[in-house]
Picture 1 (cartoon, rainbow, N blue to C red):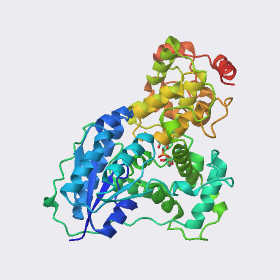
Picture 2 (picture 1 turned 120 degrees about the horizontal axis):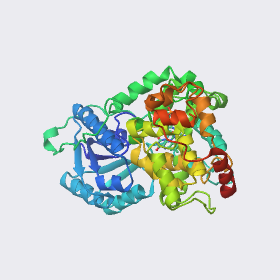
Picture 3 (picture 1 turned 135 degrees about the vertical axis):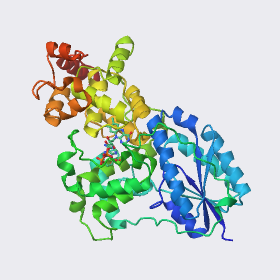
Picture 4 (picture 1 turned 135 degrees about the horizontal axis):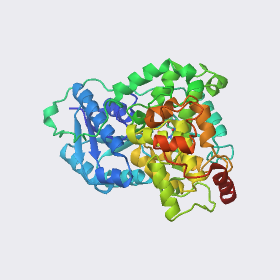
Length: 466
Ligand SMILES: Cc1cc2nc3c(=O)[nH]c(=O)nc-3n(C[C@H](O)[C@H](O)[C@H](O)COP(=O)(O)OP(=O)(O)OC[C@H]3O[C@@H](n4cnc5c(N)ncnc54)[C@H](O)[C@@H]3O)c2cc1C
């Protein structure tokens, strides 16, 4: 019999372009393992939406793997501390020859993996890969050998490196000769909370979404800022659990595997969607380089912070969370988050700037609340996004950049279509009125007064945050 290879699946729930799965299947018979750690997810503020989506994706993956005679062993344990023991037991029970996994970058995940490696180093061969990134993290350094802290030079260096090395996707495993009944797989404990109507689970669904997004890629740059238009890929939940890889997205964008010389730097620089995917890589790189600072929710910039606390902060935070700020586009955005588990990127920026700069509430409160709600909650991107908006992060918005919630509303939801979708009580207001209803209109629609006076709040922010 070929040696048994254990593939420990985590945030990489896909058959294709999964380096751990590819390498394991080259080396022997594959057995997959997933360990659910519900208490750890809660400690990381992961939303129920994300937890249930991930389990639903896992279920899909299990049936695809089983069709290839690859078992997926499902185990549950409380937290990361007990994971090493679970794997050790399986390694001994099944005489596993090698353990394969794709790396994860936040601190607790790294510590968990270090513990597993330490415990098993003399018992099994351990092989890990960078399946969550298009470029290996160590490849990009400035001319001075430093890590990049600014996006534009990072993006240029990223494109240069990417064009030099090309893109190849890991192959999916073949059907193997294996008796599935020889392994106790266990049933996956699905959660009934998953919104399959909005986010059908699985890597096949992710590929379908990518296929149907392909025709929208040329108009992405023009449409992506308008929340009433379905102009973005909607792939973030799938990327967050690894049901699709960033390389698969780039391959679709470039229409083929990239060989050296196929594309010029200018071609690559002009792709707006690619730029967003590179933001994802940038925030991962920033996390890798500043892991203990960021994972402990410290600001990237070592500068005093002047947020307000106490009753007034709590009142503003509660109004923001409960869509009662009195600014229609902000409230519609917060309802989108609550009802669908997802929020449009422009609205994430707008609502995060509103909370931090206009309400002066600590960005960590908003970061945590987003994680608790988002189906695509991702530590690196969420922390990066919040620190960008709060001007505490790497290459963040300057402190004086403060989005005006009314001007933004007029510009990006001109007709008020998005607002009306989530705030039907404002449906009768005209496009002119809906962005900032007067006191009478608010009263007749049962809509709250604004919790802040924008010009005053802006003045105060400039004074406090300078
Ligand atoms: C305050 C704040 C919090 C955020 N929290 C998260 C989060 O928890 N998880 C998350 O995936 N994204 C987060 N983002 C980034 C971005 O808003 C979402 O990735 C995007 O809205 C997802 O929609 P989409 O899949 O249709 O994106 P598309 O526009 O189709 O982009 C494709 C992919 O590129 C990546 N991407 C796009 N924009 C960004 C960005 N600014 N930063 C990093 N990656 C990006 C995502 O993986 C996205 O799925 C946050 C942004 C802000 C401002």
